[in-house]
Length: 179
Image (tube, rainbow, N blue to C red; front, side, top):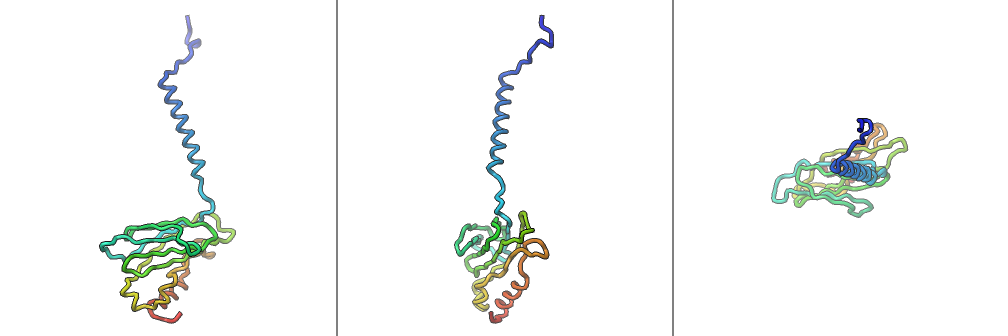
């Protein structure tokens, strides 16, 4: 006669299979985290929207990320929707926004950081495009310059646009002042 203490617990085949599958899934889960480690060279998520686009037959605009004069990424974005890029530290990028019937808009981003600035930053901006027919009345030389310079602001300890530069360029574009 067996007592309760002498009995070995019986594990059903179904429970063994479930335990094996759960162990296997956990193994895959741990391995997938190892491959999805954060890229430590990334320092900035930059996103933007174009505010003044009118609905027409082409409801999309193009955004290109430029490095060393070469397009390294591009997006086709639905009008008034946000676009986003992740940028690496210690590089100078350009973002060119274009849409048929509008003058291209360029934004310059400098991701050089001081030694104390570690981590991952985010910067959001809104801008507008100028219709081609309107741009003919504006300073064409100034339109070729970036509308904004974005860089790390030591006083604010975050990325921010150079307000003085943007004001200067807008005066040149809209008031026709010489460069």
